[in-house]
Length: 108
Image (cartoon, rainbow, N blue to C red; front, side):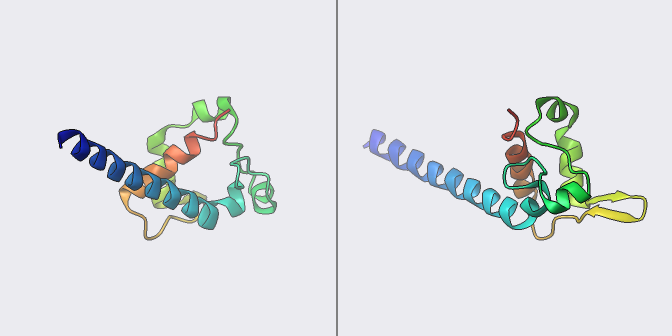
């Protein structure tokens, strides 16, 4: 009985993790990929225009701090008065942290 309960709990936890992983992938595709690219390389029309950095580059990734990425997602990115990236709207703190983890996974 105890093993069956533990297996049920583990299965439920796996479904929650899978759902959140699917959600972050969907958020990336909907809100981020148009500039950063589906693969994080920034090799898009807007990415080239805005000189988006390549998230697959290990050296560039090493220069990023999670707190700075989280701040960029929360507050957006400006270059003087020009908005380079809009702040994320409607995302929870956990969803924003999941995006940071998603970006980290691009590193080669």
